[in-house]
Length: 293
Image (cartoon, rainbow, N blue to C red; front, side):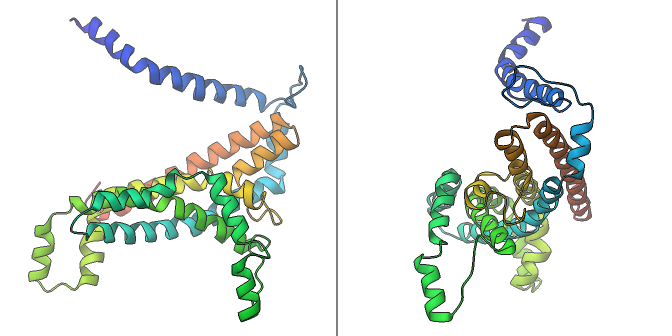
């Protein structure tokens, strides 16, 4: 087969993904960019061009300001929480003599659970008359409005998402632990290195490739939080959990401001791209100090 034939065969095998990318990514992106300059309301057959008015209005909106800061609040809560729990789970599984795969599957199952179902269960558990709140009130005199307090609502949502993703990230980190050679630890043992020093000076730096992947994935999750917020708080109280996705959904499907919501979506995508790019560069600097980049 000549070079032309091989090229056509390559395009043929790549065509399903290319078609998928065009239909579900390129076309919606172009359409959203177009709508962001209009006042379309999802219902009317006609619309008018507004230029950059939607973008100017969005940049002045309290909802957009809240979405920007709430995303980073979730990041500072969720990312350390899920990284710590994932490392602990990965260490436990790595230390098991057998049945590692079985335990990994068990921890991975929450990732497959429906976000809607998980949120509704948590909403019931944290309701005012739930057994947990009854015990807290009657035995300790503590009355916590879990979903009505800004910080508590943020923490609950971050905790649910951390529970969901811990097993998935632990799977990646376990492969990282498995890739570290035993001879490194044997040499450290001969040199009298303590377990604490061994983890921070040997394991943690050598875990960089897996940790880098998990960190980027976890940070990306914080820019797409929607289901848990929609089910539990609706973006409240007082915009305390108003994420980018929640703001876009509210403007597009509740207020029927599709043009404005498209402008918010474009702004959100730019903020996401720039934020992840900066964080990625910082992580690469850390990797370079440990000889990885």
